[in-house]
Structures are given as structure tokens and as C-alpha cells.
Image 1 (cartoon, helix red, strand yellow):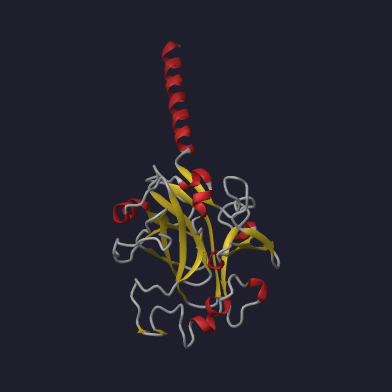
Image 2 (image 1 turned 45 degrees about the vertical axis):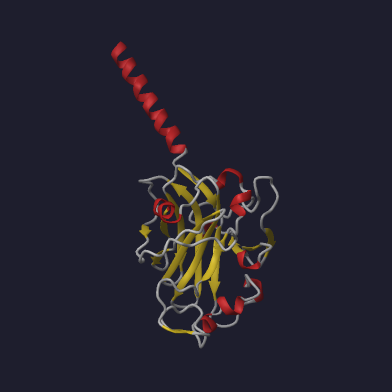
Length: 271
């Protein structure tokens, strides 16, 4: 009986340790749920305004960091809401506009017409014409925290984590670009080819970003998700932006960066 008691106690202690460890294996940064628009002091970092249907417009002081949030459990990868970026066949409905330049970035005819803002294969704008490589910068930012992480308390401390996971679901096959920033430095780019119609998890490698750009994971400032290419009108849903440790699983297929290695000498535009 004593042997059984000792074994049970050890087993229970091991299970408790694993449970406690599991509580720190991930950290949610943004799930787009109500209340997540606020900083650590409870004050809003985005001003929320209802739009048509289930859509809520999160307005930032810096217009390119506005975003649309869809409050619909069926659209979310977790919880009740997800971020959404929509591209329309022609003109953009007023209640779907995210920025003052919505006709440039949310109008498929404009983006892939004569100007080709979002077509990396045949760009024609100013001095840039012809094929564009992976490092071309004509991609639209569909989500940015614009240094809001600095005002979100412990969410700016990424130390101890190995990857940033982002769930993404495009309506058309898409290429997404991700980079992050601390208070000074910007990471190199990582790119993800995402299949349409289902959620997949983007696996942004923090270890390589730290090695390449000398990021300070204890003082992070920004997450940027950009649309690099899109094959037609539709929407990109994104949700459950979180930090995880090595070996973390996801309920969705995990995809990694397959693009070439870029110059590490990027610095934040806010420096």
C-alpha cells in the first residue's frame, strides 16, 4: 500500500507540473475579442465603431493601422471574432472602407489593373516596372499594432517563446508577409503561401528573427501582417495571434516561411 501511495503521489505531482508548465506554453497577443482593443490601463488603443452586419471598425489615430473585426463565431479560429480584410471586385462599399486609400488597396480592379499595386509578377508604378522579387515592398498592411504592444503590459514581453503563430484563412490563394519590431529594430521578412478556404497557422520563427535583427524580446512593439499577392476578390480572415514554445501544436495545418533569406539590416521606421 505504501508503494502505491508513493507512486500515486509522484504521478500526481508530475501531472500538476505538466499542467502548470502548459499554462505558460503560449501567450495570446490578439484574438480581436471585445475588450482587447484596450491597453493595460484599460484605455482604448483603437476606437471601436459598429459597421454593417457583424463588422466593427477599429479606428487607430494612424489611419493605416485601422482594421475591421468581424464578430462572428463561424469566421473565427477561436472565440467569437476575427480580423478581416476584404478586396472587392470594383468600388469599395463605404461601410467596408478601412483607410482613406481604400479604393487603391481594397479594389481588385485597381490593385491588379494598370497600376497593379498588389501584383508582384507585373508591377507598373513610377520607376518600378516588370517582375518584382520577394523583397518588393508593394504589399498592403492588413494588420499592424503600430507600437501598441508597448502599452499592453506583459504582452510586450516575448522572452521565453520561440514562435509567433497567426491563424489565417484567405478566400483566394494568397501570399502573406509577416515581420515584427521591438522598440528600435525591425525583423527580416517571412512569407507564407496560404491555401484558400481553410484556416492555416503561420509559424513565424522568433529565434531566427532575434539572431538576424538582434530583437529585444522583452520589449516588443509591433506585429505586421501584409498581403503580398491575391488571386481575386475576396477576404482574408486572421485570428488568434499568439506566442508559443518549441513543439507547440495547432488545430490547423502549420506552414513555415519558404522565402529567401533577406538582409538583416532592417530598422524600425519609428527609430
